[in-house]
Length: 367
Image 1 (tube, rainbow, N blue to C red):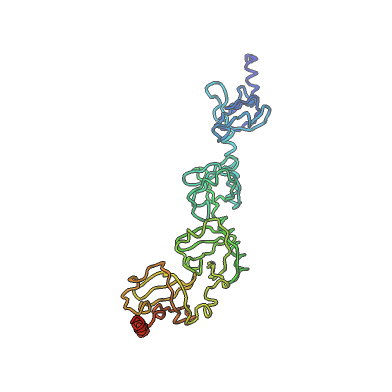
Image 2 (image 1 turned 135 degrees about the vertical axis):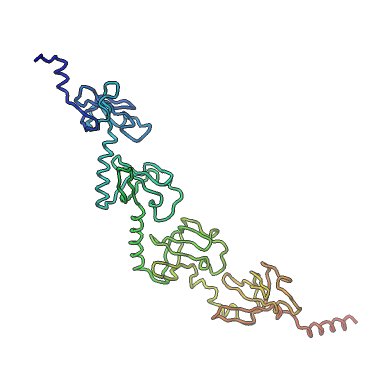
C-alpha cells in the first residue's frame, strides 16, 4: 500500500459535502453583491446577493460582517470555478415554511410587514417565506387601491398551506370580521333609540351616508339628513368628516340614523307660526298640474291649489308661477297631525264687488 501524499492527506482532512446539505460557516469576506464563507471544506462557500435576500439592490456589506456565523444550504459543490455555491435565503424560507405550517395548524395570528403590492393582492414575508394575501381577503370591505398597505405591518392567519404547489394563502379579512362582530356586540348592548353619538362619515352614496359609530356602521338616509330637502348627499358630507347623529331605529344588526333632532323640528310651533288666517311669505319649491308646493321653512311645505292662485281662471300653476318665485299667501287650513298646510293667494285679492265700488268712486271723483 503506497503512502498518501501530503496533498492527499490535506484533502482528506476536509469534510465532504453534498448538494442540498446544510453547512455552518464563518464570514471571511463581504462584497456588496456576495458573501464568502469558510465552511471547513477545501473550497470556500459563496452566497450571492440573490441567494441572501429578496432586496434587488441590497448592499451586503451593510447586512453582514466578517466574523459572523451563519448556516447555509449547498446548491452546487462546484460552481464551475472551484467554489461551493450556497443559499441562505432558501434555507431561511424552508425554516419559514415550517413556521407557517405550525401557524396554519394552530390557527395562529401572524404579524408581518407588507413586502410587495401585487396586481391581485399583497405579499408578506415571514422568516423569508412568502405569503400571498388575495385582494378579497385583505379587508372586510372592497378596496380598489391597496397601495396604502405598502410597508405597513398587518395581522393575518394562514388559510391555506401547500408549499409544494407554492401556494401559501393569508387571510386578514376573517380577523377584521371577527373584530367587527365583537365591537358590534358591545355597541348593541349599550345603545338605545334616541341616543346621540359622534361618528365618522365612512362612505357617501346617492341615497345616503354610512357613518362609522366605532366599528359598526349606521345608515343616515337622505330623507333623514335634514328637515328640509337634500338633493345630493355628496354635496353635504365628505368621507372622514365627524358628525353627531341620533339613533332613529335599531333592527337586528342594522342601525338607522337621523339628523332630525326634536328641538330643531320646524313643526314644533306650527300652531302659532302657521295659524289659519296668517299671511305668510314662501318660495315655490315644485309644481304639479293641481297646484304648487310652497316652502315656508326648511321641512315645511304648504299646498297652493290651482283654484287658490287667483280669482281669475288659471289652467296650470306654471302659467302664472315659477319655481323659486317668492309669493305671499294666506293660511286657509292647518292639519298638524298630518303636517299639511293649505294656502290661498286668491284670499288676498279684493272681491269683484269691491273692485266695482272702487271704480264707481273713482269715476264720481273724476266728474
